[in-house]
Image 1 (tube, rainbow, N blue to C red):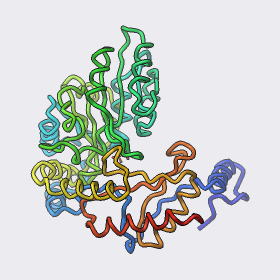
Image 2: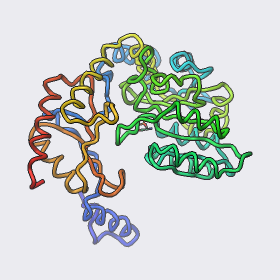
Image 3: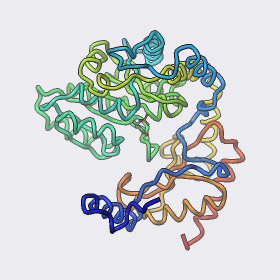
Length: 384
Ligand SMILES: Cc1ncc(COP(=O)(O)O)c(C=O)c1O
């Protein structure tokens, strides 16, 4: 295979080769790796293990046999189906909202939703650690972006106070932050939104299926705020084991995204197998709490072993400082039989590189114990 960073490339692609070379030199070169099947995977977002659930597999296979492999068009042309409409009804019921919409991926959902609901002149208030897709959606909309320090509601209040009274204001935040495992404070956000006449878009990508005692619909449910958050998006790609995303909210807001969301309008709808798996997953998370309970037990185990209790969540950042140290720990953990993703700048701020430990209901207590022991032993090794 030709070396992509080769400096003898023709002039017209030299800029790209140089850029890739720089990334390599600074240890920031990204590659699509495959997790070695011989390692225990502590990096995936399959929090409940549903990617391997028999019902999801069976429903997906039945859908292919019945409806084929493709949806054949965008939702506004030939891509809609009774199955998608039924999934949207199921999601609205799960999230207890008036309506819901299925979108093609979490990334595409966030970009499309924000582009659809915002316009230049509106103000958007974003947590500094929001997922990249939320930032990209705001940029695309042309609305004015005000970022507040991570989970700092005093800072958010100061920013809100600066916005003109008659502008449309949206507070946009992850509910569970993907790289830190920290949690948004939904009741406090709702109180601020009420005080300043703002609306909230909550990204429940890492909370759907994991949080919420009765329906497992997300952090908004767990914090008693289901009916108070104007728009909630989430994905079927993490705890729900499959692929795709949803938006839940009022009929007016859903219709707004259908009519204005370019990523929704101009893209082929999800295929039947993906819809069928998502539908089965929304059913399973509500009827089989054992997966969630197993995950919570593993979570408590890690938190009591490693003492990282400030934010009890299934995503545990193991901080190591510099990016090169994260790579050192990543390699040493591989040698010990575990795979944890090293997360480095620019994904996270300078000097906050970490190993992202993500737990799954499929991990056994013994596996979690073995990882904690390996981690504690490696931390004593000054050479890393
Ligand atoms: C908070 C958050 N929102 C959205 C997404 C994008 O979801 P998807 O992977 O389905 O595109 C992610 C993915 O990691 C995420 O962490």
